[in-house]
Image 1 (cartoon, rainbow, N blue to C red):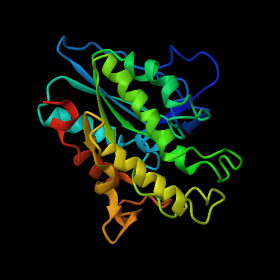
Image 2: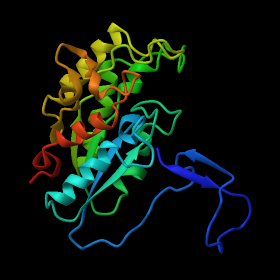
Image 3: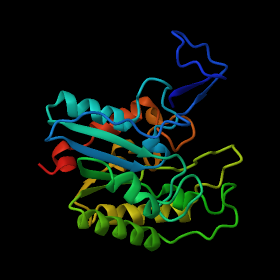
Image 4: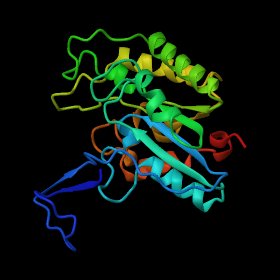
Length: 256
């Protein structure tokens, strides 16, 4: 949700560049390295499109990790940076829109300088993809299989002395209703989400961020609250992303 600009030829010496085309994504930028204080810490948000900021307003930095970064600065949390490693379509157990979480954990999380905490919010695509147009013939993983993936990530984080916080999966009833992707949600898949969330809340992680509680409709807990719904019943809009970030207990996040 950030504009990238494309132009043909070598224009590195131009004072002003008139793009031939634009797109809403950083197609080539992989990372930005900055100078840091010796006591700096990094929090990596490791997730899918909801962490990537899908359906937030373009070019405004309204993803929930952006709002979290603002809070950390304003609330005097010290030299803490937020590294957004959300990839739209990402899954814990399977590849396709990027490598699966187990495969990319070393590269995208453990290799980050000054890493102290990772926030894991991933699994809804493992649940929702199989049986819909995204993966019509794919065998659906069980909730236990997704949980086993979480356990591996927890163990690997702890081996490196990294704090790992689990974020609950947000409501997704009627996701993509009226589109070719309808079928992403059904009651069996909802039962898996609830089982996965129960594990996240069980104490296996070093802390819990309850994004489910922050975004669900109290009158229909399977459904995202209408004022936070971007329209596809899965991704929040800007206010929903802000509510998610503001629901985070910074002591739980940082362990202090």
